Image (cartoon, rainbow, N blue to C red; front, top):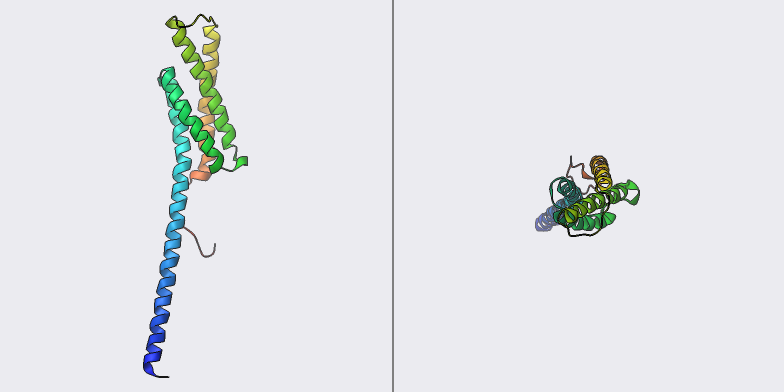
Length: 164
């Protein structure tokens, strides 16, 4: 065997090992990016629920309706982002119902105060239902935070591992 063959063989081996290393690192980076993207999508579900909650306390019914539409979209997206048995969809459904109760009360109150409706529902009963829904909304939001912790725990952003 001559020396040039040995040198070329070693160079080919080193280039092969470097190529393998680059591919491995790129795979880990892509995996970490996928985890980050999933984290961002899941976190946006929480942010939408939080904004909906805040809207029910401070905004008029028309702004609550806009937040309700955003929340409905996030709720539908959550079906693809979380396990069915996680209970997250159930909590989001309760949040949606609470928001609807609050929004109905605020809309009816506005229409009633401005003589825009001939309906004469008992405003105090609607108010009581709205307040009950408001506190349930808060409790459901806190439960959602606890359940999302398993999905949003971001202590490590390691990507794919060769072995675990």
